[in-house]
Length: 96
Image 1 (cartoon, one colour):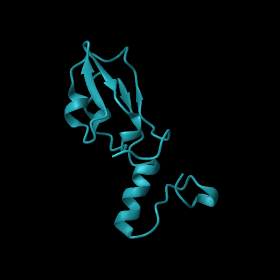
Image 2 (cartoon, rainbow, N blue to C red):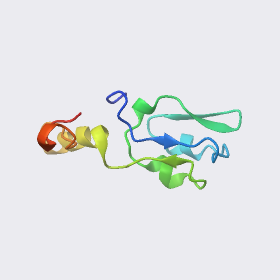
Image 3 (cartoon, helix red, strand yellow):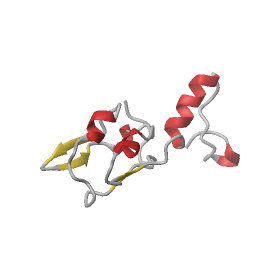
Image 4 (tube, one colour):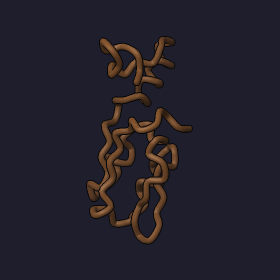
């Protein structure tokens, strides 16, 4: 599943990565793989910004603003039965 292109808050610092692979284990959408002793981001647009990778990275190599952005808007829209809204559109309305 891919969300909207180019809006993910996911940031990855390969210099801090030790290749432990924890991000690959906890990411529900397979955003990460490990190759050559480092994690690699396969497709940041698959990130649902849940924060599991950041919360489980002991080396601070990953940052993501969990609970914000378009992924959160889609989930909130599904829960409430309304239109997705991440408050980033005109007048705090529609999703990106």
